[in-house]
Image (tube, rainbow, N blue to C red; front, side):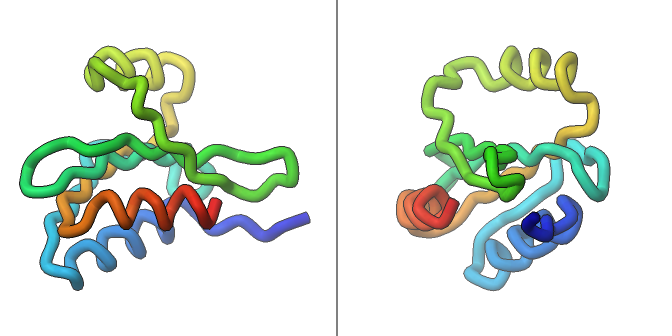
Length: 108
């Protein structure tokens, strides 16, 4: 069984990573500190690029999945909150956002 990083620690790491590179990072919605799902809205210069979701995989580890199909973020979040009231939402506005998304989804 894989050890899983608590969600609040992963959030703190992502916020620091974005801010250390001169970007903007904010927690939009706080969820369960240990096991809440994590949704990351990634932007570059104020333009939304992608939404990433941290999902639990079959091996009980987490994988990052890009969700480009999300056209109406507000509707998506409303549905997500109904299904999972413990999820987190953070926003990252960073330079080279496409590279960040590619690295996150490649790592899993």
